[in-house]
Amino acid sequence: MEYVRFGVSMQPHYNLIYREQEREMIPFCVDQKLAVISWLPLARGLLTGKRTKERNETERAKTDAFGKKLYGADADFAIVERLTEVANEKDYQQRIFKDWKNFISHIRSLGLNRI
Image (cartoon, rainbow, N blue to C red; front, side, top):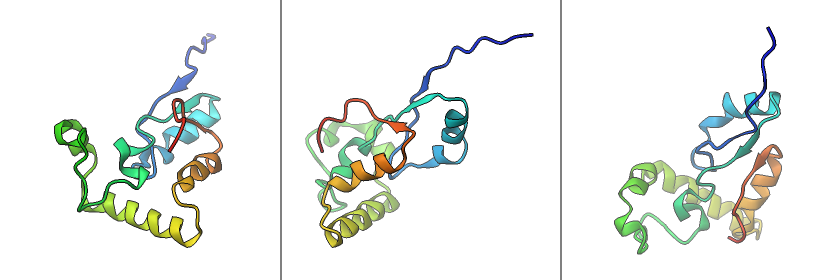
């Protein structure tokens, strides 16, 4: 029996904070030649460096109950804090996110025009 390929892409929840997809789904997509389009690549703005644990409430975040469920744990802010430290050490600033996306060459992110 012959199967017809129908999938062309997958859009998983994937960013520097939530990397669970690296274990199974991304390798599967690479093997099957499926595109991966990251959902929430900037983690609802957390990875832009404009929010910290102390300064977490943007105007949007004040009414974003779903976003609070996704991001807001101490570990999330620890990742952002360390990312900021590395960016400052290497003088990359916010460009480090784009560099990471390029390093993971099989990840494609649509709609990322600026950071």
